[in-house]
Amino acid sequence: MSKRRDRHQQTVATTAQASEGEVLAQGDGGQSMAFTFGDPMPVLDGREILDYLECWANGRWYEPPVSLDGLAKSSKASVYLQSGLIFKRNALARTFIPHRLLSRAAFEQIAMDWGWSGNLYLEKRDNMLRQAIGLQPCLAKYMRRGTDLQTYYQVRGWKDEHEFKAGSICHLRVADINQEVYGLPEWLPALQSALLNESATLFRRKYYQNGSHAGFILYMTDAAQNEDFVTDLRNAMKNSKGPGNFRNLFMYAPNGKKDGLQLIPISEVAAKDDFGAIKNISRDDQLAMLRIPPQLMGVVPQNAGGFGSIREAAQVWAVNELEPEQARLRQINDWLGEEVVRFRPYEMPAAS
Image 1 (tube, rainbow, N blue to C red):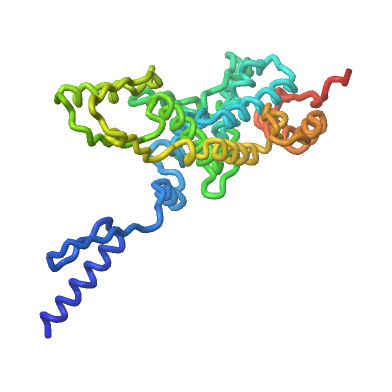
Image 2 (cartoon, rainbow, N blue to C red):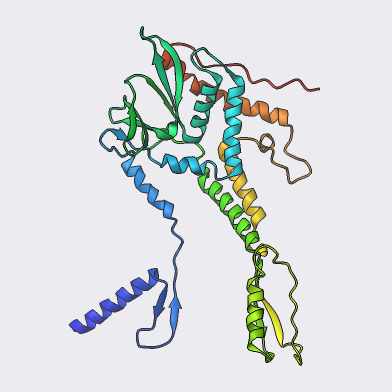
């Protein structure tokens, strides 16, 4: 009875493994095999553990909830994502009024950091009388916040760190629902679309560089007069990839039959990758997350009607997106106690 129970348990265990495995052979020595697979599991699902850890403290400062180095690289993964971030920075810089404590170049730096990372840092530098003489931007990629939430560090690498004087750093962040230490960029949900757009472009580049656009089988039944002929033909086919892949190939087969040499195509990649659809859909996702009208990004409309008036789109965008961003950046004035961040109204040039 116990042997029968053990045999049943082994069968159940084998079935459980088969539901997660790939190839399962018949247990009685047979030749039949079954291929099983489940739903795709993205590797990035592992980031859900960050919802529990929030920001990990290493003893002196909190680590960001996401890798800032990876986030900085991802911001350049797609043309539309990087272009949208630059567009917002330019709109803020266009309306910014320089101040003796905050130059235009310094403001452009913090505006860029605010867009790609959701954080900005300004260091207040004082003279001997403890009067502010300037505000210098600190790169958000390397900034860390201390465990007391008052101290800030600039960490560039192993044993390459700098602790700022207490109270000298102004830190603005985009609010997050999981932690209150660092900000996260608003475009983070569009990261997958940006990476998909990049992957489609890289795939198409490799597709053209490879040169073998359509796989095929060269089927030969004619008896070769010399084995060297088969070797030469094989080398000629190998050399047809890469630059010059469209060169002609000459073959001479004496007494050959009509079907002695056949070219059997396998697949045509261009008909299956849907390059244009992937690029357009991922582009729309990114523009929706950045909340920028497509006509302001230089996107070419696919229909005859177009996207509508550019002037009206710019005015609506300025009211709904630009002015709230300006209001958030004015929090620097509250921290410093002086109005250093000022903006002029967003005005369109008169139509000719």
